[in-house]
Picture (cartoon, rainbow, N blue to C red):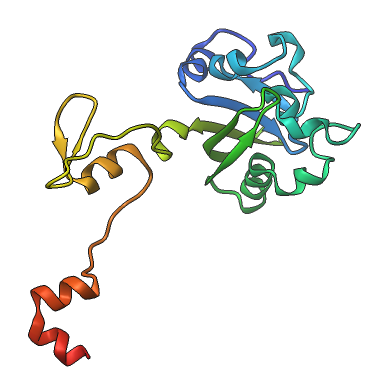
Amino acid sequence: MVNLLANKGFSRVFFDAIPQLALVLDSNLEVHAMNQAALSNCTLEQRDYQGQRCGEVLGCIHHLDDQKGCGFGPFCQSCLTRNIALEAVKVGKTLRSKGKLEFLSGEITSVFVSASPFKYKHQSFVVIIIEDISLISELQGLIPICASCKKIRDDKGYWNRVETYIEAHSEAEFTHDICPECTKRLYPKLSSKLG
């Protein structure tokens, strides 16, 4: 097994500085390296993860679905991390996808998973970056909105247009249109022609 990033040189320090979970997997989806963010979310000791598959290391709830472990259960065929890693290696380019991961803790997290393939010593690998976007993709709780103008107050006390607030706190983007009622009110001549 290739021991990637074993020493504390620049590449190891750089890899550990990445704030998202970062793993290096081989073509069998076995883990060869993890950064500190991934290690802090991992249920295994640093010395124990090599040779383990991604779902086992991250604590995916589905790695227990089959006695053979990660990659063999019925859910594994639709696993976001597995599929993007395999596809990135197949097409030879970086891919990114959004989805949800389920953990043994019962937590379901919205994530972006990026996969970037590379070769080292004639062996194929893929770097996986898992970015938790649950806080920015799902608005939760009470949101103060003006009863008159419909602006939303952010956590700093500033009042923002609804579009501005939602774009800043989610993955949503806006495009503008005019509904039929407003078309009639604002453009009565055009509305009568549209019928």
